Amino acid sequence: EAQVTQNPRYLITVTGKKLTVTCSQNMNHEYMSWYRQDPGLGLRQIYYSMNVEVTDKGDVPEGYKVSRKEKRNFPLILESPSPNQTSLYFCASNPRDRAGQETQYFGPGTRLLVL
Amino acid sequence: AQTVTQSQPEMSVQEAETVTLSCTYDTSESDYYLFWYKQPPSRQMILVIRQEAYKQQNATENRFSVNFQKAAKSFSLKISDSQLGDAAMYFCAYRSLDMEYGNKLVFGAGTILRVKS
Image (cartoon, rainbow over all chains, first blue to last red):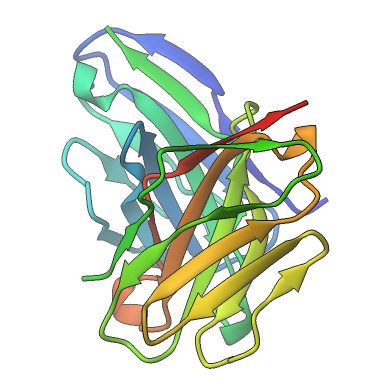
């Protein structure tokens, strides 16, 4: 089954404790992205990757890091989480071709609470 | 930069009735994609319908249809014969075809749709 998986699905942590949210896709997609969803703001792109070892900032990258060492994986790293990073996070992927513009595969979301 | 605006934070509809959710966007591009996503309480993002800007014909998917007005930069979603399962948050989204934007989806703030029985 074609899917994007995220782990963990729920996480409560404390300010400053480094954490990683994993994202994996099994569709051999080139493009992967991270979004955060906040009330009244919709979803906003944090970082994206166009292929292995190619990553770039989205609209709200501050406080986040990413890596793309393998095509299927795109982890989101919070080196020193702060309460303003409490949010719902989505990983997404799609293929590079024109047809890939028509769709987007989303993970199930990770709800993060930073105390 | 592109922006997407959903001016209705909440909407209500009676079961079996029709409701229209509004979306406007701003762009200087001539070709792009527009989407409506549904997010039920499970928080899963579900694609409802998509429209490519160069296609004049409005997209339809069963009970869901759009009114795409390119000149007005408007992309509304009409849900006919509303069902209880349609209750959700609905997001309008824009995608540029320019790879400079990294295949990004730009989302509106969302509209909560409540369906009354």
